[in-house]
Amino acid sequence: MKFTKSLEYLNRAERIIPIASQTFSKSPKYYPIGASPLFIEKGLGSHVFDIDGNEYVDWVCGLGPITLGYHYPAVDNAVIEQLNKGIIFTQPSPLETELAEKLVEIIPCAEMVRFLKTGSEACQAAVRIARAYTNREKICSWGYHGWHSEFSVITERPKGIPQSFSDYILPFAYNDIDSLKEQLDKHPGEVAAVIMEPVIATPPKKGYFEELQKLCKVYDILLIWDEVVTGMRWSLGGASEYFNIVPDLVCLGKGIANGLPLSVVCGKREIMKMMEWDSPVFVSSTHGGECLSLAAGLATVNEMQTKKTIEHCWNIGKKLRDGLSAIGLETIGYDCRPSLVLPNDQVWKSKLLEQLFLRGVMIHIGGLINVCYSHTDSDVNKTLNAFEDILRIIDKVELKGQVAVPAFRRM
Image (cartoon, rainbow, N blue to C red):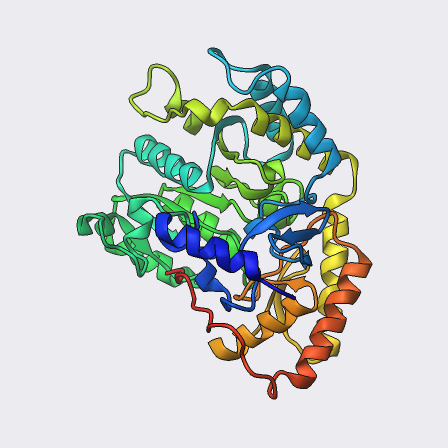
């Protein structure tokens, strides 16, 4: 494989785009520069093609937004049909109501819905609503909720954010109910809500979510589930449906529109009404009602309702995990989104990426695997053959490109 154009575009991008990308997790530094695809030109089904024309089975899926597949006909056709009508209007589109009705139907806590563009925006809106509803300011947080100031201030990249913001975010540990109770007891009457990703890779302990929900009721605070990742993957109704837990608010994003920019904050009516016309809460977005993304969202949900898309992803993920286990590689998490357990050795991981690219397979350097409806048994077999081949030689081959570096750590 040659990566000539990737390197040419990297040189162009670095001069005019900070980190040569719009997100840290797509930065070229995340890959072994010199022996990796750095720019993708097109996608089809579960495969992508880099700017040099090389083809890969893609297990990253745009960092998660691709739930059905690239260039997926039903979604593309819906977008094209809407494009012929218009992209955005002076008044709301009927699509806003139609998609909201669908989400109320499938998301357990959803009685009212608002649309935004990114997961970061949805989480920020949920936190603002919770503070207004409870008349409290502090938030207990676990997981990653986007790049906005109050969440970023507790990451490794806090520069540019008033340090006082950190006073309002109280981290707690997952699967440790006492760590949350400790924060609540330390700040009596000050906490508005708990916001958390319901799961990343480590499964919840038995009864953990029930205890957490009970604790929120005892302390009279809201429970916000950040389902930007888990929504429309664990089940049609997300982790809420899968774990049979009904939070007060849920944030959705990534895969809800199969790649188009759309996010959602939804929840119980009395809380969501904090955004009504006569409320002092300000949540407003011109492009929240942009029609191409809404059309894509409606088409995506319809496909998931009428086809066994979730079941297929779980089945494909299980076949991949079983095969990886058979050749000595450990995975954690859930079949719909497993995660490889890789050595804490950036050189080793960089060599793994290089060798996978050479065999036409693309994974995330952190080991996360996003399964989409377009992945096939053939993709699984090709991937397993690649891993089996690489494990025999990885300790002998030299790294051709630069050592890949991590982008940031969840705190």
